[in-house]
Amino acid sequence: MPAQVSALPKHAPGEPGYRRVLLALFAAGVATFTLLFATQALLPALSADLGVSPGAASWTVSATTAALALAVLPLSAVSERFGRQRTMTWALAAAVLLGLAMPFAPDLGSLIALRTAQGAAIAGIPASAIAFIGEEVRGRAVIGAVGLFVAGNSVGGMAGRILTGWTAEAWGWRAALGTVAVLSLLCAVAFRVLLPRARHFTAAPLAPRAVARTVRGHLADGLMRRLYAIGLLFMAVFGSVYTMIGYRLAGEPFGLSAGLIGSVFVIYLVGTGSSAAAGRLVARLGRRGTLYAAAGTTAAGLLLTLSDSLAAVLAGLVLLTAGFFAGHAVASASVSHAATTGKAQATALYQVAYYVGNSAGATAGAVAFHAVGWHGVVALGLTALTGVTGITFHATRLAAAAARTGDPAQPGDPPRAPGRAPAAAGRPVPPVPHEPTGQPLRTGAGRGAGETAAETIR
Image 1 (cartoon, one colour):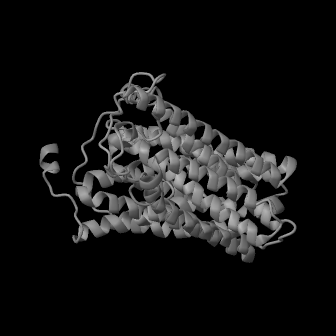
Image 2 (image 1 turned 90 degrees about the vertical axis):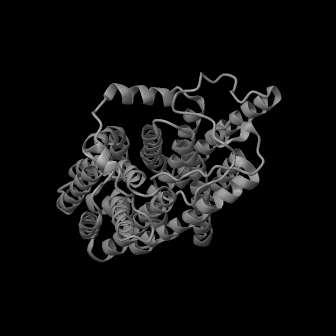
Image 3 (image 1 turned 90 degrees about the horizontal axis):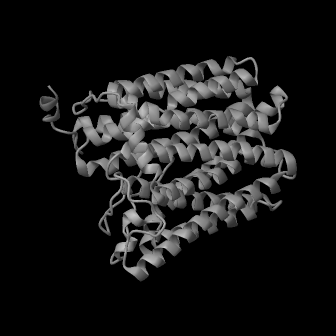
């Protein structure tokens, strides 16, 4: 039976099945990220209505992303056993049902508990969607299909924040969460109706020991650890700023309404452009050069947000968003490309680091804001960016040492894990399932062995 199933044709552009895959996964992407960050624009309203501090309210974001980070690896293994389609269907159904219950939460503790469970449920969607595309879509069309799923993520993340902001201004935060849940329910129904039946999935037994070995191999690899750390630190900056920016803009001297604060998240669209531009920057500056530029742009944006001019703050958010998505594009795509085996686990580990960074950044940002105001959030972000720069500088020194000796293996690194192998320069690097990573990145033509895609941060 497996051989017969695998002989069936994969979906290709121009075919009805391919269009159904694209539309179904776009709907899943919108639902996923609409739900995931549903409370981020509502934090000032939650604080005012429930009488809680910014730090306490921020747990409605932090707990959700932390639960997602913890559940990604186990649910990626579940999808190997029970199927991508089934895993996504049950994960999306559970997330929507929890979303429908949230408007009735009696207090903050109940809301955080529901959000935590929702984060764990949401983890089953990105873990399975990319695998489904890889198995069911013809090779050259995979990147386009992944790109549309990522676009759904971006649209959902932005639209959810804007929708909740304006709905909360008119009818309160409970109505806002209800609206998001209904939108996600419609997307879930569209996903289930449109997604074609899987043709090429072959169930694999649950093998925790094998997964653990693969994970240990990735974590033992110096390059992978650096990429995971860069993703975590960039996301800590982004998470702290966007979790606390509502309080900054609601207070003096701005006094913006909930609807206007929600509209600020349209700046997310800048990230789509900077992700695509990252490919051109890599061709011109190299991977490490692009990371330096991304960190510098993000830092400049942070400093601009200290101004009491609304125009300057918005310009700062534009720069910060552009820098973050460029850095995230380089790190996430490098992880996906560097792992030649155990790709699902390598990507899942990046997701773990990414969402741990979001959770830690949101929590630490709330503490800093409560203690010393917006200056504390900026100081926290600059500290994280110093870490990004330090890791990249360390990689630059390793690359220089390798160039002098002519040995692509870097001093101080452990032996290469089975999950990594050098790749040919110029090979396209596919995006991964997070917030938008843009177009596939390519290494610059003519770069040496020490600058190949698998050695991006060395």
